[in-house]
Image (cartoon, rainbow over all chains, first blue to last red; front, side, top):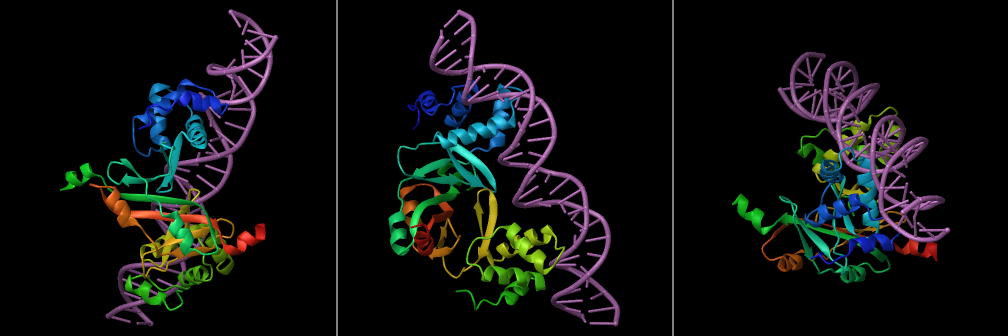
Length: 140
Length: 140
DNA sequence: AATTATAACGTAACCATTACGGTTTGTAAA
DNA sequence: TTTACAAACCGTAATGGTTACGTTATAATT
C-alpha cells in the first residue's frame, strides 16, 4: 500500500537528515501494518543498534509523525504509531486481538456539522475496534 | 440534562458506599459540562477536604466510570472525565477553547460495518473538536 | 452499639515520556 | 575531499501522571 513512497525524499524535503536509524524505523513500520508502542520500537532498534537512547526513539517517532510519515494514536494512555497512508482522508479499524489495521473511507463529518448548528468542527477522531476475520476464527 | 439521576441509588446498587466525597465529586462534574482532569478534581476536592489523597481521586473517578456515572476520554495522554448522560448512544463535540461538550446522536457504525466485510466491530471511539458558538465570537 | 467491609490517608513506587549537556555524524559548501 | 555546521544521537536524570500498599477511618448492617 505504501511501497512506492520515497521516504528519503520526504525527510530531505523537511530538512531532516536521512540516517540509518530513521530508515530502520521506517522499514520496521512498513513491515508491520498495526499500531506499535515506542517501547516495542526501542526493543527492535536496540537489537540493531545496541545502546540506542530512548530519546532517539521518542524524538524520531514524533518527528516522523510531524512530517506525516507516521500516524499517531493513544491506546490505554500510551502513544502508538503506525505507518501513514496519507494520500486520502480515512480512519482505522483496529483488531483488538492482533492489532491489524484496516482503513475505512466513509466519514460523516458533514452530517455532524449539520447536527451541530453554530459550532465549527475543526478536526475529529474516529477509531473502530473489533476482531478481524482471522481472529474471529481463532476464537470459534 | 442529568438533574434527575439518583446518584446515591446508583452507588448503592453497585455496593458502593455513599460518601460525602463521592457526592462532592459528582456535584462538581454535574456543574461542569466538560472533560476534567484528575488534577483539577484533586484541586477542587483538596480545597473542600484538605489533605485528601490523590489515590482517593483516581480510584473514585475510575470507580464512577465503571458504574457509568462518568465518561472517560484521553486528551494529550491524560485521562479526563465528564458526567455521563448514558441513556442513549451518543458521541461528543468538544470545544478546543473552553472545553464545552455538545452531544451528537448520528452514528454511522452500521455503514462502517458494511464497508468492512468479514471483520466484526465491537466498539468505537468518536470525538469531534472545534469551536463552540461563543468561542468563535471571542476570536472574531 | 457492635461488627464488618469498604473508603480514605499518607507515602512511595512505577512507568511512559521528556530534558539536557556533551559527542558524533550527515550534508552542503569551499 | 576537506571543512564547517546544524542536526542527530548518547547517557543519564528529571518530570509528571498514575498506581500500590499498609494503616486508619467511616458507612452500612446486625
